[in-house]
Image 1: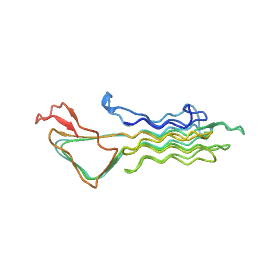
Image 2 (image 1 turned 180 degrees about the vertical axis):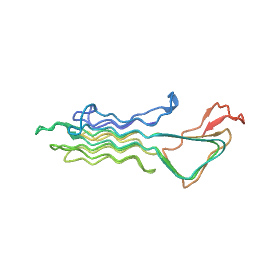
Image 3 (image 1 turned 90 degrees about the horizontal axis):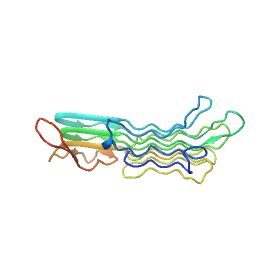
Image 4 (image 1 turned 135 degrees about the horizontal axis):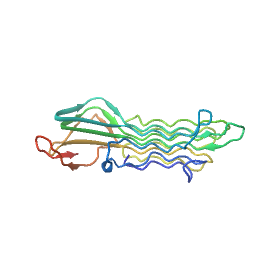
Amino acid sequence: GKQRGGNGGGIGEFGANGGAGGTVFDQFAANSFQGGARALTIPGGSATNPRPTGGGGGGALMLVACRGVLQFDGVIDAGGGGGSGGADINTTSTVTLLGGAGGGAGGYIVMQGAEVKVNGRMFANGGGGGGGCIVNGCVGRLGDDGQSPTSGGNGAAATGSAGPGGHGGFGTTPPETAPNNFSTPGGGGGSTGRIQIFTPAGVAPAINPFAEISPPLEPARSVSTRARAGAEMVLP
């Protein structure tokens, strides 16, 4: 994602603190085609002794029409997954609490063609953080996936008097840090991802005014290619 994920409440990653959301990832600097970052998951655990699980990162998708028109009319969802809720990881009468996990970062969507027409909806918003819990044997609520073009994943409500999770990033709105004024906070929201469209120099993509894109398209970049027409490809 292009924004750092929101921190969980408190200072540490887990323990009584919430986990950080999926963090910034620069796809331009990567040597491979990758989606968004998964939020941290505390190691260990089992079905009877659960650990809060960080939300999965959104996927990566590339659509290419080398010589013709690439027209998109549907829905592409590359939103990050919601973080799992906090938990009492002690199976005895003793209460050992962990805060909620962070939401995953949004993924990576790329479209490239001699012409590109966008009529549909595509989004790569961050997932919401899991809610904290504070009672014996509890498992907190799961944060929402970043599956809406108009908002990031909702942070989960808390169980008992613990803290809620933070909302995932969307559009130009950064991910939310979970409030830290609770003994067992929720997880932070995940970062937004990236959406790019490549067309030849001088050819702007046709974006329908009713199309929904979140986060906004990246600013223009020039990329050298060996296309037949010899045209330089430009990222609007």
